[in-house]
Amino acid sequence: MKIQILGTGCAKCQKLAQVAEQAAGELGLAYEMEKVTDPMRMAQMGVMRTPALAVDGVVKLSGRVPEAAELKLLLGAPR
Amino acid sequence: MTPRSQRAAVDPELLWLLAVPVWIAAYASLVPLADLLFGLTPLMRDTRLGEAVWFFLYDVPKVLLLLTGVVFAMGILRSFFSPERTRVLLAGRREGVGNVAAAGLGIVTPFCSCSAVPLFIGFVSAGVPLGVTFSFLVAAPMVNEVALGLLLALFGWKIAALYLVLGLAVAIGAGVVLGRLRPERWVEPWVLAQRAAPDLAEEALAWPARIRLGRDAVVEIVGKVWPWIIAGIAVGAGIHGYMPEDLLASFMGREAWWSVPLAVLLGVPMYSNAAGVIPVVEALLGKGAALGTVLAFMMSVVALSLPEVLILRRVLRPQLIAAFVGVVAAGILLVGYVFNLVL
Image (cartoon, rainbow over all chains, first blue to last red; front, top):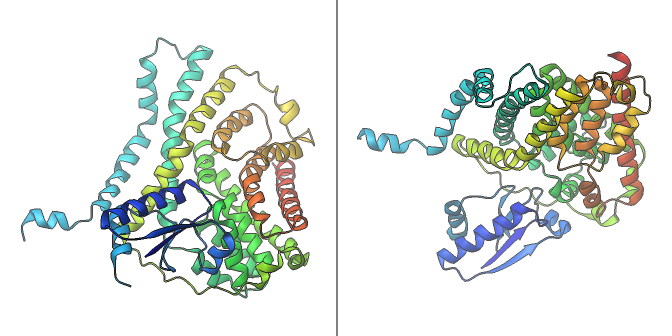
């Protein structure tokens, strides 16, 4: 599974990446993480508020850092 | 169902609403609190040092409380808006009505200058006219909860309301003027070639989630600015106690025509420490600085920030960046002068 963190490198984006790594680790997921910092790609994905999280190309969340429990739900839920 | 399980059914986030009566009680006891704390010092209030210290002990809790209240309320209000919904409301709007709507929505739509570029692309690709987009980009950082909360705490609601109205006026005016300059020629071509990405699925939020967003906003914003505020109030308290009356009036008063442009020039490069500057400015005002000059300074600190301008360079040509900064600065100058003339 591919986890993308969209953000320009602000503190919240790093926080989201960290929480996502932790959640994915605890779920025992096989994943690769990519940090998307190019605003053009963010816009193409429809994201106007950073930080955002996409799983396999689908934006799941934007504009906030969720708690670990919610993030696990987003990463674990079938699409 | 036992009482215990009923209690468990209440979302713990709702307990944060209990902070509201605590907040009110704290706000009502600011003077006794300052007196109590002051009693712990060996100072007397009729000395200069004593007066400055008492002022500090009263102002710090007051400003932090009011700021917390405004940020919390704004955080909840913003949970009802999103850039996606705002973009739909603004798409295809004509100038005038569109600029007014964009400035108003700029206040309540969640916005961070770090995502100014994807937001700009998102708006323009969905058919929001450039001038209307600029009205949004001016209003969103200028009329923010920190500025409003601090103005409310230090200057009262009338000045806070005035700031709100004038901030909207500058945002609307700047957007209309920029829209007339045929700004399309100065936008990087790849931006205009973007096709609108499909809207993201809207998150349906329940009240506990909204309250959490309000709380998060308090932790994030107040958590970041409180040292600046305390430092600012300390300097302000010193000015209250020591600086001679009317010294400032000579070079920050309304007679000095150059005070407004100087205030704007000083304000533009400042950004992160705006929260600490405002209490100092309040003290200056008390010593004869003119209100228009002070408001112009504040607006330029928060509306035009160097980091945001640098970020926007990725989508805008230098000509448009210059026009953007120039038009907004001109609007702020106008506000400063009109104020100094009228009041």
